[in-house]
Image (tube, rainbow, N blue to C red; front, side, top):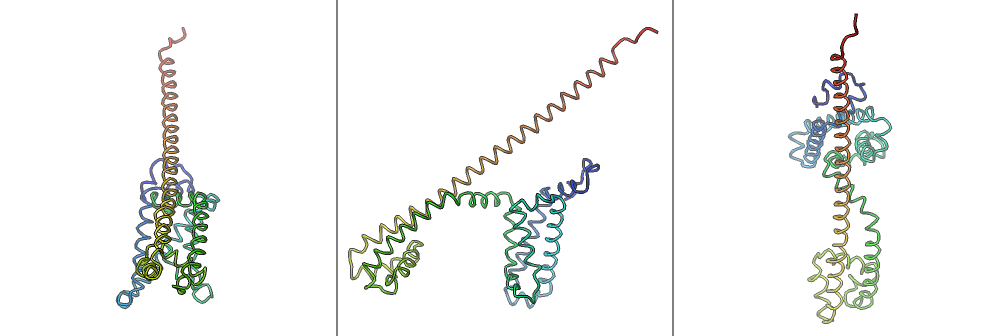
Length: 281
């Protein structure tokens, strides 16, 4: 964290120095380490032997982490002012930390059980995790059409399964709702053959002609479409960020070159002035 407080910051305002501090890699690593430490303490609180042996220490770590997280959020608000609230990651961090300050005696105290959400702050601290989350959010519009396609597939398959197999397996295909749930379970490949298909095949040997194509389409086609959209979004976002970084580096290089040229011209002017003959006395 001390690398932010260099000689270049000596003349900077306190707000600018705070902004440089919170953006340094050392500060970000310290916050990530605190998040992991707090996550470990919260996990140990769910283990009774650890609570009996280290209950006081775990509570101290939790309260200290809340204070440090709050100080970090306040420092970022001081450094960035209104820009902090325009950043979705900043608002997310603020809400996660604010949950810890809810009074224990109110009806909202149940939200304190979600203290473990602080671990998700790693997504705002680690750039690679932030890239994945941003890519997933950016892929939501592309997923809408896939979700619609999957809904149509499930609805058609659910109606067919209810009509064909509702009398054989009423607990699984007795109604449209039960059929949709069973088909969703089959899409995840969770005991789809032994628990669902084989008992039906004993009475309807040709039932595989319905279930096998459904598994192939729902599991190996539709789900892979989701993965394809997310991977494409990650690649697009990575390329965009790389282009922005290259453009920023190019602009910085051009600014450095312009500064060097300007200093060279000033130096040449000084040398020329020194070489100029003195006017006759």
